Amino acid sequence: MIDIRQIRENPQIFKDGAKAKNFDVDIDKLLEVDTQLRENKNRLQDIATEKNNLGKSIPKLGESEKKPALDKLSELKQEESALNETIKQLQPDFDTLMLEVPQPASPEVPLGKDDTENTELRKWGEIPTFDFQPKDHVALGMALDMIDIERGVKLAGTRNYFLKGDGAMLHWAVLRFAMDYMIKRGYTPMAVPLLMRDEAMRGTGYYPGSEEQTYRMEKDELNLAGTAEVPVTAYHSGEILKEEMLPIKSVAMSTCFRREAGAAGKDTHGLYRIHQFDKVEQVIIGENDEEKSKKYHLEILENSEAVMQAFGIPYRIVNVCTGDLGRGQVQKYDIEAWMPSRNSYGETHSASRFYEFQARRMNLRYKTAKNKNLFCHTLNNTVIASPRVLISIMELNQNADGSITIPQVLRPYMGNKQKIEKN
RNA sequence: GGAGAGGUGACCGAGUGGCUUAAGGUAACGGUUUGCUAAACCGUCGUAUCUCUUAUAGGGGUACCGGGGGUUCGAAUCCCCCCCUCUCCGCCA
Image (cartoon, rainbow, N blue to C red; front, top):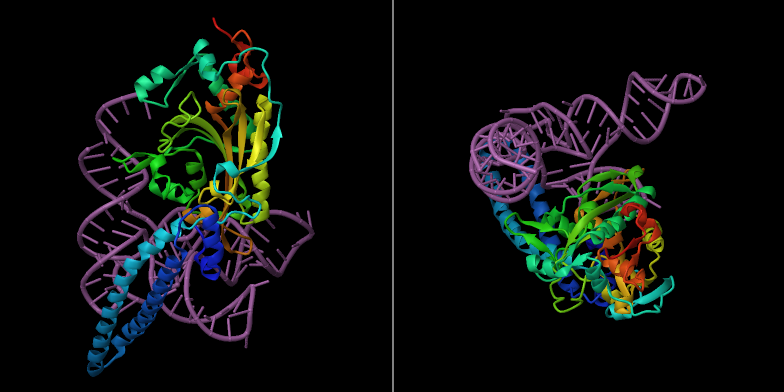
């Protein structure tokens, strides 16, 4: 959410910002409602003052003076309830519009209409060539009895799968390595609830907007989080933290649930786009300081790169353009991993910087040394998401005989096994 | 699922109609004392919003004691509805 005072002072920035991000929001309408609301509220305040004064004087008045005073009072009350009625009508419009105003992107974000206009910042690693006919992860996984998509679909519908044997082991190895790495970097591990109230969804910026992407438990009015970002970022919502607590760096591993509505027919093959996966996610809750936020942003990007490098996966860093940014993001770096079967890079990570946007929505603040309450800044990034990353790992490390060499760093998590082979 | 208790400021916790923004305590900040640390003592210390002024500070108004409505000249305090939390019992991983 944006500070309404900033919108009042400089509406054009927010109009342009929304346009660049492809969001449709009526700033003029918002300002109009804001003006009306303020007029009514100011008048209401004056009435309250008058009422209070009058009320206090009443016990001191003589009998003859009491009657006119009471008459005046009931007159004021009538006007008061009329104003309240108007405010009650305007307030929801105002609140709705406020939740819709996007955070303008940072100047270093490239202008663009959609993901085709994202710009590549740099690459890491060599794209391998094979001197045999390489298989894709599905063929590999089926042959090695690691992946069973058919039965996943039988039991849970399309975009569902089983991992078994070394497939399950590899999946957990990747997650555990990522978790251990982040803990070594000083991030606090968290196990989190995933059934979230609407409030948490709104606070992180997923609502309004991503309702269609989200599984909802209608009976309980709870939402199945699509990422641990929701519980971890909202963890301190509504609180006033002490400045010395910041930055709070957390890492959580969780299952992620996504409906993938509107993606029908897209990426239907294999484990790329699925309804349920596991992810290690890093979150930083920091000070209200743009320079620090940028520093943290690079830090969380580096953390993920280190993990990708440890796995030996070639990747590139993409500066996501304005049109592909979410409502709240100031800037976003995606990491895209090389996936031989797609013959392209596929998104595996998304590092976002929000400044105050999320903190304002969830009323997450801290008290400075000067006793001021400021909204925190929030950031998050994937550390690793599996099984999507298994596509790269399996396909890149396959051998001519159909076996898969396990990356060094994952072997300790797989009983020091070096290869996954047919048995 | 059944029964009960409760929701007050960063935190704990008092407060059953006006003198309460709200006692007391903790934490924090400033000061006195002090070789240092600690302790003790004194002082300051809620949030939001509007407005004024000798305008990165101060003054004033208003609202806020879970949310919404009501009674009343006046409500944290009384009434109604809702939400949430906790405890006990039952069932159970």
